[in-house]
Image 1: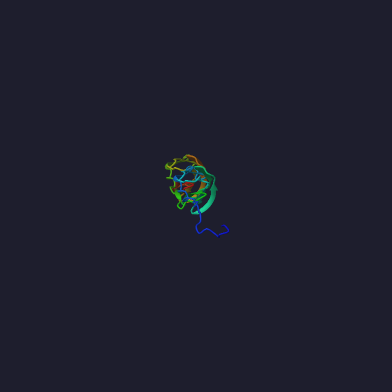
Image 2: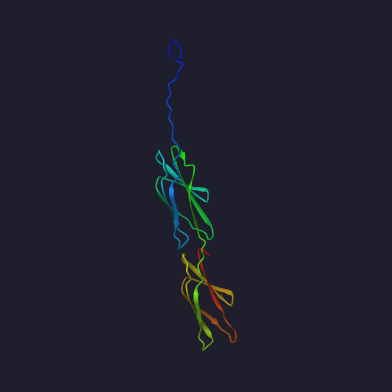
Length: 189
C-alpha cells in the first residue's frame, strides 16, 4: 500500500503438508502359545511417509488401547481368553495426520488339547481295596496342560495337576465294573 493506494495483485506462497503416512507394513502379532497369557509381541515395518512418524496408535478389536512412541515393536501384556479372536491393528501418525488405513493381525486360541492316551488303571487285587494307580500318555497340545479331570463311571471325581500318573484311593466292591476316564484342559479348552 502506498499513498497512491493498494496494489491490485498479491504476492502469495503456498505451504502444504503432504499426505498422511502410509500404515505400517509386515504387521505381526505373536504370543506365548504355551500359557495363553503374558505378552503379545507386536512388530511392524514403518509405512512410507515424507514426514517423520511421531507416534503409532494401537487398537485391539477396533478400540484404541494405546499410543506408542516411534519404534517398530511393542510388547502388550494380556491374558488371552479361550475361543476369542483378538484383532490387533495399528496406524501411523505424523504431523500430516494419521494414516487412513490400518495394518491388522489376528490372534486366537481355539485348539483344545487332544485327550490323553494309553490310560491304565491298576489296583491291589489281593485286598480289593486301597489305591488305584492310574497312568497315561499326555495328549498332543500346543498349549501347556493346566489340569486333568478324572472321571469314575462317568462322574467327575477330581482335578489333577499336570502329571502323567496319579494314585487314587478308593474301596472297590465285588461284581462292579469301574470305568476311569480322563480329560485334558489347557487355556484353549
